[in-house]
View 1 (cartoon, helix red, strand yellow):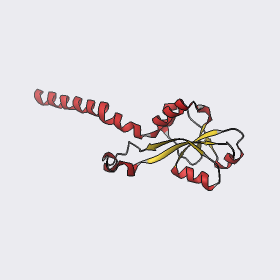
View 2 (cartoon, helix red, strand yellow):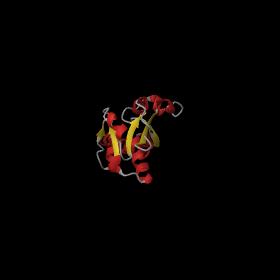
View 3 (cartoon, one colour):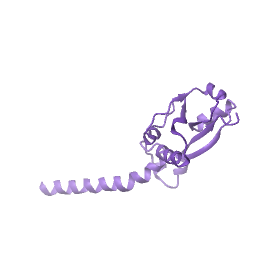
Length: 144
């Protein structure tokens, strides 16, 4: 009994270290929030000027990494901007803005995958690119 307990304990510790120091650190760069936050800080973008569109799409890892909760803005209010702002957007939100003839400049573009829902197609390096979405930080209010 004692031998099986030690064997189980040793296997658990091995799996713990394998997952936490090899597997998950390689996955997390695909969750765009942390990568976006690093690039935002490197670009010198004022965090208080980052918004979400009111389409209920949020990136909680971005909120966590920026240590702030960006507010939402209505897409109808974007045409009358007096100063430039930045919007977090995915591909569908970007197409909404373009359909409304709102001029946007892509400042940051990164690949994204929700790593809490792992699928074999993502885990396979040959098919990974097919599963990735794109997330953007867009600048609005310049030359509208």
